[in-house]
Image (cartoon, rainbow, N blue to C red; front, side, top):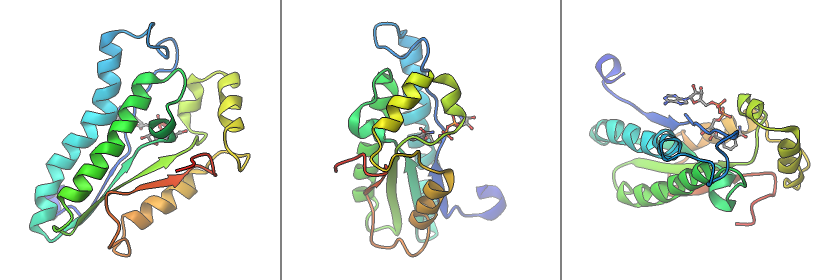
Length: 175
Ligand SMILES: NC(=O)c1ccc[n+]([C@@H]2O[C@H](COP(=O)([O-])OP(=O)(O)OC[C@H]3O[C@@H](n4cnc5c(N)ncnc54)[C@H](O)[C@@H]3O)[C@@H](O)[C@H]2O)c1
Protein backbone atom coordinates (compact mmCIF):
# COMPACT_ATOMS: atom_id res chain seq x y z
CA UNK A 1 0.00 0.00 0.00
CA UNK A 2 2.70 2.48 1.02
CA UNK A 3 4.91 1.39 -1.88
CA UNK A 4 2.06 1.97 -4.34
CA UNK A 5 0.40 5.11 -3.00
CA UNK A 6 2.99 6.59 -0.67
CA UNK A 7 0.35 7.22 1.97
CA UNK A 8 -2.37 5.62 4.08
CA UNK A 9 -5.32 7.82 5.01
CA UNK A 10 -7.60 5.30 6.73
CA UNK A 11 -7.04 2.14 8.74
CA UNK A 12 -10.04 0.10 9.89
CA UNK A 13 -9.09 -2.76 12.19
CA UNK A 14 -11.91 -5.21 11.51
CA UNK A 15 -10.37 -8.69 11.51
CA UNK A 16 -11.54 -10.87 14.36
CA UNK A 17 -11.42 -14.41 15.60
CA UNK A 18 -13.50 -16.13 18.22
CA UNK A 19 -14.29 -19.72 18.97
CA UNK A 20 -17.62 -20.14 20.68
CA UNK A 21 -17.72 -23.92 20.72
CA UNK A 22 -16.11 -25.75 22.46
CA UNK A 23 -13.69 -23.11 23.72
CA UNK A 24 -16.20 -20.57 25.05
CA UNK A 25 -15.75 -21.19 28.72
CA UNK A 26 -12.53 -20.30 30.48
CA UNK A 27 -12.17 -23.76 32.05
CA UNK A 28 -12.45 -25.48 28.67
CA UNK A 29 -10.15 -23.10 26.83
CA UNK A 30 -6.53 -23.99 26.20
CA UNK A 31 -3.74 -21.46 26.68
CA UNK A 32 -3.03 -21.67 22.94
CA UNK A 33 -6.65 -20.77 22.12
CA UNK A 34 -6.54 -17.84 24.59
CA UNK A 35 -3.34 -16.58 22.96
CA UNK A 36 -4.78 -16.90 19.44
CA UNK A 37 -7.90 -14.92 20.30
CA UNK A 38 -5.83 -12.14 21.89
CA UNK A 39 -3.36 -12.21 19.00
CA UNK A 40 -5.97 -11.71 16.28
CA UNK A 41 -8.31 -9.35 18.14
CA UNK A 42 -5.84 -7.21 20.09
CA UNK A 43 -2.24 -7.64 18.96
CA UNK A 44 -3.27 -7.54 15.28
CA UNK A 45 -4.81 -4.05 15.52
CA UNK A 46 -1.82 -2.81 17.52
CA UNK A 47 0.62 -4.08 14.86
CA UNK A 48 -1.44 -2.58 12.02
CA UNK A 49 -1.48 0.79 13.79
CA UNK A 50 2.29 0.59 14.35
CA UNK A 51 2.72 -0.12 10.65
CA UNK A 52 0.68 2.82 9.34
CA UNK A 53 0.93 5.54 12.00
CA UNK A 54 4.40 6.79 10.98
CA UNK A 55 3.23 7.27 7.38
CA UNK A 56 0.04 9.01 8.54
CA UNK A 57 2.13 11.36 10.67
CA UNK A 58 4.46 12.14 7.76
CA UNK A 59 1.55 13.00 5.45
CA UNK A 60 -0.29 15.17 7.98
CA UNK A 61 -2.74 12.78 9.57
CA UNK A 62 -5.24 9.98 9.06
CA UNK A 63 -8.16 8.10 10.52
CA UNK A 64 -7.91 4.91 12.53
CA UNK A 65 -11.08 3.04 13.47
CA UNK A 66 -10.96 -0.05 15.65
CA UNK A 67 -13.91 -2.42 15.56
CA UNK A 68 -14.38 -3.32 19.22
CA UNK A 69 -17.63 -4.82 20.52
CA UNK A 70 -20.33 -4.50 23.12
CA UNK A 71 -18.58 -7.61 24.51
CA UNK A 72 -15.70 -5.36 25.53
CA UNK A 73 -18.01 -3.14 27.57
CA UNK A 74 -20.28 -5.72 29.14
CA UNK A 75 -18.42 -9.04 28.90
CA UNK A 76 -20.31 -11.62 26.84
CA UNK A 77 -20.94 -14.98 28.48
CA UNK A 78 -19.00 -17.90 26.91
CA UNK A 79 -16.52 -15.50 25.36
CA UNK A 80 -13.95 -14.57 28.03
CA UNK A 81 -10.96 -14.15 25.73
CA UNK A 82 -12.93 -12.27 23.05
CA UNK A 83 -14.49 -9.97 25.67
CA UNK A 84 -11.07 -9.35 27.22
CA UNK A 85 -9.50 -8.55 23.84
CA UNK A 86 -12.30 -6.17 22.88
CA UNK A 87 -12.09 -4.38 26.25
CA UNK A 88 -8.38 -3.98 25.64
CA UNK A 89 -9.05 -2.55 22.16
CA UNK A 90 -11.15 0.11 23.90
CA UNK A 91 -8.17 0.89 26.17
CA UNK A 92 -5.80 0.96 23.21
CA UNK A 93 -8.11 3.39 21.40
CA UNK A 94 -8.34 5.75 24.37
CA UNK A 95 -4.59 5.72 24.93
CA UNK A 96 -3.60 6.21 21.28
CA UNK A 97 -6.28 8.86 20.81
CA UNK A 98 -4.42 10.98 23.36
CA UNK A 99 -0.97 10.03 22.10
CA UNK A 100 -1.73 11.14 18.53
CA UNK A 101 -3.99 14.07 19.38
CA UNK A 102 -1.69 16.74 17.92
CA UNK A 103 -0.61 14.77 14.84
CA UNK A 104 -3.74 14.97 12.70
CA UNK A 105 -4.43 11.30 13.34
CA UNK A 106 -7.68 10.37 15.06
CA UNK A 107 -8.16 7.00 16.74
CA UNK A 108 -11.69 5.91 17.57
CA UNK A 109 -13.55 2.66 18.08
CA UNK A 110 -17.07 1.37 17.72
CA UNK A 111 -18.77 -1.10 20.03
CA UNK A 112 -21.45 -2.84 17.96
CA UNK A 113 -24.09 -5.15 19.32
CA UNK A 114 -24.68 -8.36 17.38
CA UNK A 115 -24.82 -8.34 13.57
CA UNK A 116 -25.99 -11.46 11.73
CA UNK A 117 -22.74 -12.33 9.91
CA UNK A 118 -20.88 -15.66 9.48
CA UNK A 119 -19.92 -15.44 13.15
CA UNK A 120 -23.51 -16.56 13.92
CA UNK A 121 -22.76 -19.97 12.33
CA UNK A 122 -20.70 -20.85 15.39
CA UNK A 123 -23.53 -20.11 17.84
CA UNK A 124 -26.53 -22.06 19.04
CA UNK A 125 -30.01 -20.68 18.36
CA UNK A 126 -30.38 -20.35 22.12
CA UNK A 127 -27.38 -18.03 22.25
CA UNK A 128 -28.61 -15.98 19.26
CA UNK A 129 -32.01 -15.57 20.97
CA UNK A 130 -30.24 -14.52 24.17
CA UNK A 131 -28.27 -11.84 22.32
CA UNK A 132 -31.43 -10.51 20.67
CA UNK A 133 -33.19 -10.32 24.03
CA UNK A 134 -30.49 -7.92 25.26
CA UNK A 135 -31.11 -5.31 22.53
CA UNK A 136 -33.85 -2.80 23.46
CA UNK A 137 -34.57 -2.03 19.78
CA UNK A 138 -35.57 -5.70 19.40
CA UNK A 139 -33.52 -6.42 16.29
CA UNK A 140 -29.93 -7.07 15.28
CA UNK A 141 -27.65 -4.36 13.93
CA UNK A 142 -27.44 -4.18 10.11
CA UNK A 143 -24.03 -4.30 8.43
CA UNK A 144 -24.84 -1.04 6.59
CA UNK A 145 -25.53 0.74 9.84
CA UNK A 146 -22.13 -0.03 11.32
CA UNK A 147 -20.49 0.71 7.95
CA UNK A 148 -22.08 4.19 7.93
CA UNK A 149 -20.73 4.91 11.41
CA UNK A 150 -17.26 3.70 10.46
CA UNK A 151 -17.38 5.76 7.25
CA UNK A 152 -18.08 8.90 9.25
CA UNK A 153 -15.30 8.15 11.76
CA UNK A 154 -13.00 7.65 8.75
CA UNK A 155 -13.94 10.94 7.13
CA UNK A 156 -12.55 14.48 7.29
CA UNK A 157 -15.81 15.50 9.01
CA UNK A 158 -14.61 13.55 12.05
CA UNK A 159 -12.06 16.20 12.94
CA UNK A 160 -12.50 16.80 16.68
CA UNK A 161 -13.34 13.31 17.93
CA UNK A 162 -10.53 11.04 19.02
CA UNK A 163 -10.07 8.36 21.65
CA UNK A 164 -13.80 7.84 21.64
CA UNK A 165 -15.89 4.71 22.03
CA UNK A 166 -18.91 5.06 19.78
CA UNK A 167 -21.90 3.01 20.81
CA UNK A 168 -23.96 1.25 18.15
CA UNK A 169 -25.91 -1.23 20.22
CA UNK A 170 -29.60 -0.40 19.70
CA UNK A 171 -29.82 0.91 23.25
CA UNK A 172 -28.11 -2.04 24.93
CA UNK A 173 -25.14 -0.12 26.31
CA UNK A 174 -25.92 2.29 29.11
CA UNK A 175 -22.63 4.17 28.79
N1 LIG B 1 -20.96 -9.97 14.05
C1 LIG B 1 -21.19 -9.47 15.25
O1 LIG B 1 -22.21 -9.73 15.88
C2 LIG B 1 -20.22 -8.48 15.84
C3 LIG B 1 -20.60 -7.76 16.98
C4 LIG B 1 -19.70 -6.85 17.54
C5 LIG B 1 -18.47 -6.67 16.96
N2 LIG B 1 -18.13 -7.39 15.87
C6 LIG B 1 -16.82 -7.15 15.29
O2 LIG B 1 -16.98 -6.71 13.96
C7 LIG B 1 -15.85 -7.10 13.19
C8 LIG B 1 -16.32 -7.88 11.98
O3 LIG B 1 -17.00 -9.04 12.45
P1 LIG B 1 -17.73 -10.07 11.49
O4 LIG B 1 -19.00 -10.43 12.13
O5 LIG B 1 -17.71 -9.57 10.08
O6 LIG B 1 -16.75 -11.31 11.67
P2 LIG B 1 -16.40 -12.44 10.63
O7 LIG B 1 -15.93 -13.60 11.47
O8 LIG B 1 -17.49 -12.65 9.65
O9 LIG B 1 -15.16 -11.79 9.87
C9 LIG B 1 -13.92 -11.66 10.49
C10 LIG B 1 -12.86 -11.50 9.42
O10 LIG B 1 -11.58 -11.51 10.05
C11 LIG B 1 -10.73 -12.24 9.23
N3 LIG B 1 -9.61 -12.77 10.00
C12 LIG B 1 -9.64 -13.67 11.01
N4 LIG B 1 -8.41 -13.95 11.45
C13 LIG B 1 -7.57 -13.20 10.69
C14 LIG B 1 -6.16 -13.06 10.66
N5 LIG B 1 -5.37 -13.73 11.50
N6 LIG B 1 -5.62 -12.20 9.76
C15 LIG B 1 -6.43 -11.52 8.90
N7 LIG B 1 -7.77 -11.62 8.89
C16 LIG B 1 -8.33 -12.46 9.78
C17 LIG B 1 -11.58 -13.36 8.65
O11 LIG B 1 -11.01 -13.89 7.48
C18 LIG B 1 -12.89 -12.63 8.38
O12 LIG B 1 -12.89 -12.07 7.10
C19 LIG B 1 -14.96 -7.92 14.13
O13 LIG B 1 -13.97 -7.09 14.68
C20 LIG B 1 -15.93 -8.38 15.20
O14 LIG B 1 -15.29 -8.66 16.42
C21 LIG B 1 -18.98 -8.29 15.28
